[in-house]
Length: 340
Image (cartoon, rainbow, N blue to C red; front, side, top):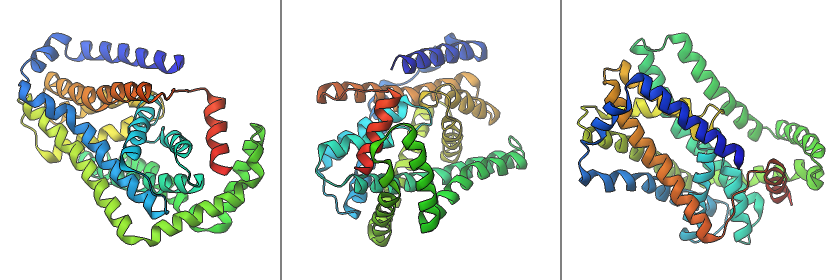
């Protein structure tokens, strides 16, 4: 936890220095002070509406593997999972195993089914994010902000792992091979159940195939994922227009896609610094004054990252859930839960 705190503090300091060099805090504060108070409740609530929508999606995917959970329970762990995503590198995916592990402790359901629902959830989330990344990359290439070689490199980095992952799940021999390799790695960490991993991965695959067959639930999940991305785009649009910046929905979608690309670089918790600097730079290239660009992005990140994280940590304290980032405990406990 101390390492995470140090990385957060270091990122904030670096971001502050960058903003001071680019625009100066005085100009940013001047723009932010023009925000009408009537917009504040909407700006603060909209990020939580994304989590509410996501909790409905996760509940549907749990139902697809015959796991019935109250929506209030799903929302609680969706919120806590978001906090872990925000506090670990690779924003949006860092906390997925952790929230699956926490939910498995709460309900009496096979762990492989819970993790199968999370695997489907991550796949659907990735599909919705790829759409935004593709839109952003192509738009920036057409505007000559990216060259086409960079565009294809970005798309390759995004699509190749997805293709390999889908093929591994589809081909039984490939899945068994990967499972044996992971099993050998787990033995080095002295995970007792490592020998049973290949068999359990095949059962995990069967649960995912069962989810795929329930096309109606999959369709609903994809629509909800698209709705979540729409809320995020609309939030950015509201923020900038509330600050008096004339920006269209399309540009907001491009900016969100750029933030997703930069934020998923596994270097800093929640993509701090990379997310802000990349989106501010792109907005500046698109003709938005840097002071207004920085103000809008900082307000967006304050609502979607800092407020959500603080509320989630407070909720975890209320629920009596302790956050642990110890490598050995988190890794071994999560894997043992999955294959036990």
